[in-house]
Image 1 (spheres, helix red, strand yellow):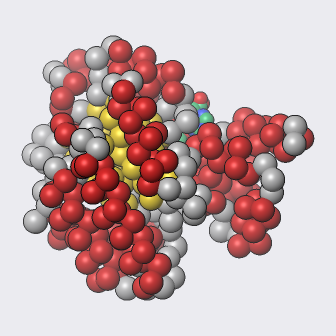
Image 2 (image 1 turned 45 degrees about the vertical axis):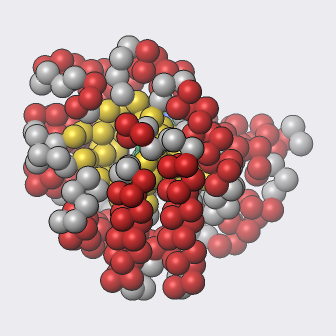
Image 3 (image 1 turned 45 degrees about the horizontal axis):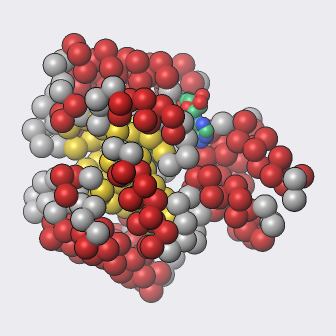
Length: 307
Ligand code: FDA
């Protein structure tokens, strides 16, 4: 119930204005967002890399409604990739980037979004790193996977994100568990209707395990994106079962969420990548993080009263 209310607020421009102007927002945002500028994102990337973690950077933005905004987002990625390369952060797949096609214009011009994504893939190739396409609400899944397959013809390292809460995802995992295919598996963060998505946490977790089994048994490169201790333990078990050495899969977590677990897994010898969002358009992202965990609302409220 609370999750639904917060996810509905994530789509409300009125609540967005309220939250963005609240004096507390910057403190709360800092926990989950690495900063606003490319320099701030680079600093966070360097710190994480120094701790032995890998990074994927997301220039925050979604639901872009005009071409100017979409081009600005694309340009921000080109600038970021150059900066990562110059700082030596792209070597050995240390830092890569994650993209939302909606931020590149998918909602109003799918071809434009694809062209923007293609330019970013070319820049990533030049910088010696990879790109992963984020998954958004289910109305975009077909379009995103179609674009993925077209772009992969020229950029085979382009990664996909699949959401275990969608009923279709087991089939998508089977399609994508092929040689060289990078697939990030997450639970899914949007409010979705019953006919397309499992609704209970148990059903979502069971689907996650079925999808993980397919990916870990397959020929691709699985990226297990979760903070859930039970799923992480199952991931460790499957890695042993399917003889997946640390260079043949990775765990992934969000910036600011269970940082001690990120380090524990890394110290155990696993590859761990942290998803680092940055930029001024943090509202939708922050609201999804709050919806994931009621305790985060308490964190938000405590910061409010301590002001
Ligand atoms: P779950 O939500 O059950 O959390 C398990 C435990 O982790 C909690 O008990 C708590 O301890 C901790 N935890 C989880 N979330 C927390 C939070 N916000 N704050 C503090 N603690 C928290 N979704 C999507 O729809 N499209 C996408 O492209 C992506 N991309 C993506 C990339 C990466 C690298 C990650 C890790 C996640 C995503 N997600 C996503 C988000 C994902 O779908 C999901 O909403 C969150 O990861 C939370 O689910 P968990 O698997 O962590 O389990």
